[in-house]
Image (cartoon, rainbow, N blue to C red):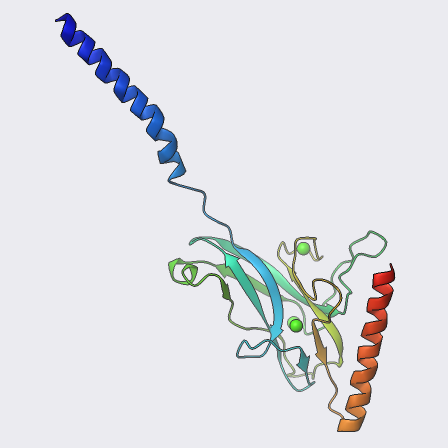
Length: 202
Ligand SMILES: [Ca+2]
Ligand SMILES: [Ca+2]
Ligand SMILES: [Ca+2]
């Protein structure tokens, strides 16, 4: 009888030890789902080809690169602003409010399901962010800002087409005779170069 009791106690001890050993493994087996992570936003055409120069009679699209996101994850009501070149940058330590210079900012939500989850990393389908109808695009130099938390300003973790401030997100170039066009582009490039030099000195 004593032998039987000893056997029972040993069995209980082994089961308890197994439970202690296995439980952390079981907890680890259900990791938290990975949230959607966007790494870039870039200007493109209606087919998703990256494009940085548009004429006033064209439409501007953008695409976002998603590096991570488990099924069921969402990002809701992100805003996509088109602003003048570097207009999103801090001035005197103050982050300026974003003012859209196109036909209004776009609102975009992302939802990851089991189908598109398997495609990540991926670029999103092109998103129309500035239509030339009814008003043609205004020539100039622009950046695209992804306001993920839709608070109307560019926070440090939020992406910009021109994230380093050294390159323009995209140009809208006037439709002019070739000679005039070359002169305009040369002057725009010179202005950009001068700005970059000023930034590097700061
Ligand atoms: Ca727009
Ligand atoms: Ca923001
Ligand atoms: Ca671009």
